[in-house]
Image (cartoon, rainbow, N blue to C red; front, side, top):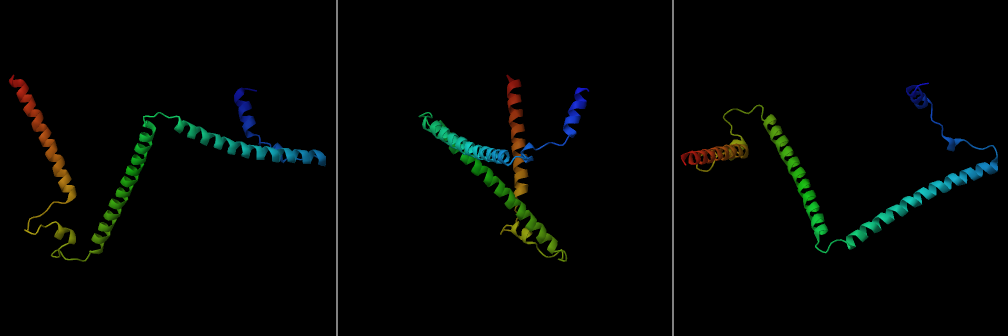
Length: 164
């Protein structure tokens, strides 16, 4: 038989659970069951013991850490990052819920006439009658402004360089 055939043969065989087979002799069966029980309790106690050892190692490492406090600074930094990530998720959820509310408002006004003024339109008009840009438009304008400004700066530097 080749390796592949043996591999397939072994994997197709149902796995035997020897812990399920019992001895005919009652004394040996009791011994076997006691051994299984002791193994399971030993495994649980070993897990608890290793968890306690791990905790004591971590405490010892904190006690023996550098006096400069880099570890505490690192923990504080991680806390701040975690808080920042939670805040960003919350802001995204709030923005999504606000967007959904706006869509619901617009869908609910299906029969409104063109002459009626939307609440969004009313808020975009300043008291002097001039229109005020929304936040997205302002961001777009600001991005365009900064892009133009960078291009002008590069052009001025290039002209100054060629002028020498």
